[in-house]
Image (cartoon, rainbow, N blue to C red):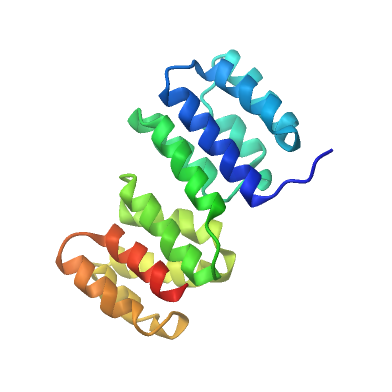
Length: 191
């Protein structure tokens, strides 16, 4: 069996998104991806069979969530909910190939989720599961936001866990109603 790596995963998601965006039906797209990426043959065949039986893609994907980037399942779920599955598959490609520190990946992932239309609190819950080393921080920030604080105020309460410039970037982004840009800028800064 071939070894899995983040570059192959990125290429796989990109190919799936591109083929579907080109009008190739999902089952045919899954067959093409399965044949092109043997390291993921078992997982893709399982997805193919489930979709053929009428299942959406996110549910069987969750069965193999440990084989993929932690944001793959929520991004595919968002894509299916919003009718933008090919675009979300391309976002899966982006997050799979993204390198950098854990904090950089956290901010990039939050930017990707909020840019995809996921509400902030739901994005924080996804990040809480996807980044166990920031689980407590994401849970606390989510509670503070639910309690009526802005994201920046909530982040300030946990600032010892993050790069000291991130709250400043996020304050400006929040004031301009563009959190996703602030998350992406924070990712680039930390990287």
